[in-house]
Length: 177
Image (cartoon, rainbow, N blue to C red; front, side, top):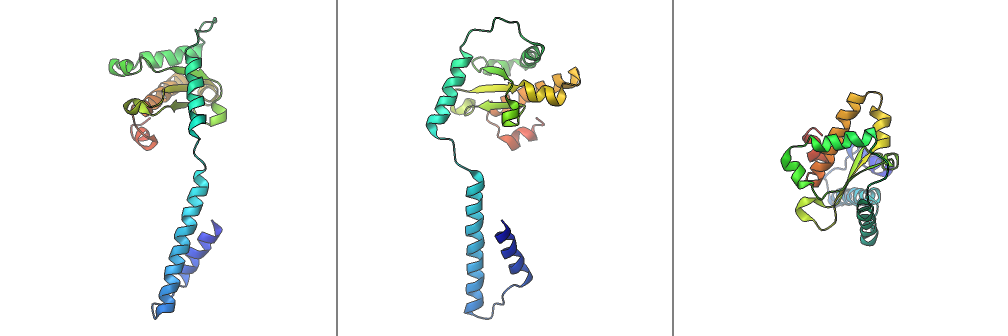
């Protein structure tokens, strides 16, 4: 990154003249170097994609857990907030969600999120879809006030449902979620 900034600064502060082939070659080489370095850095920062078998294992495990019978204990207050958020959705959205598992987890601190949509949207349906709402991060950040927590749980549920319906992250944020 430092090299890219230095090259750009040098190029902008002391641009080569266009007086001959040597200057033109310098411009072309500097441009190619900047493009190459930017591409390399972008690839490095993007990281590796999750292998298909790992993604499949994660989805299969999520589906298996969703098929388990309900726990012996009654739902917690937080579980009730999630259920209320789902029940308060318009009828059209509830119909779309009939077969979509929504679970509550305490692992939000691991993924730094309030919720997560796993799947490839209702339109493609190549992978089983799943929504996870993270109790630990929501209660940590909004648990000081039950009304604020309720509003954020509702917002998080709607945010993840928007992903299920096909919106990407910028699109969901444009919806105000």
